Image 1 (cartoon, rainbow, N blue to C red):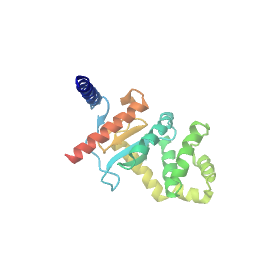
Image 2 (image 1 turned 30 degrees about the vertical axis):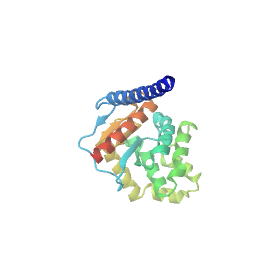
Image 3 (image 1 turned 90 degrees about the horizontal axis):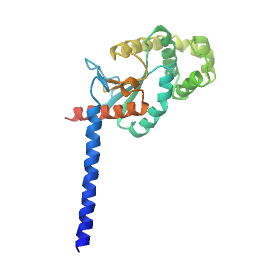
Image 4 (image 1 turned 45 degrees about the vertical axis):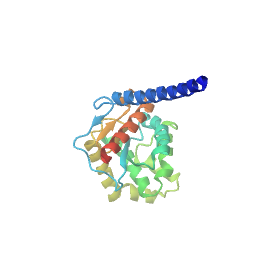
Length: 221
């Protein structure tokens, strides 16, 4: 009987220790994620870009950025577990005139209905294939590989609608105080990047998780 009681006591003790360790680890992790270190607070908080009532997560990228390219697998894995709980949006950044050509390519693909088909291959072509896709002629040839007629490409690439979205992306890049890519904006008020995660993409994802939870708790309080 004493042995049985001791076994039950030991099991309960181990469960308590496990719970304490988990709680302590969570508190320690949260304690490390401080504003100014793990993320910046954007002031004022920006307006949402979607009609969803879910927490908005904005991935800021540039097709020519090797760090953005390496970050893609982490984003995909994270979205597999979180896509239903957040509103995910991409923002092709415009930090200088040279970047605008890829922003225009992004919105051209979106307008033509082939964005998801061409997004990863465009990254691959630049970083794995070492292709120089940095002007309208080379991009037109690339889009042609996906069945886009040259005339349709030019018409869309220089359309009023696409040009407007490029200008909007440039304005959002400024408003979100983006200084480099990749970056992630959570709930239109928290900005984090590999720099905030000491260059670790895995840690960057952890910070994003933390900020999504933080934002959700604020909305529910």
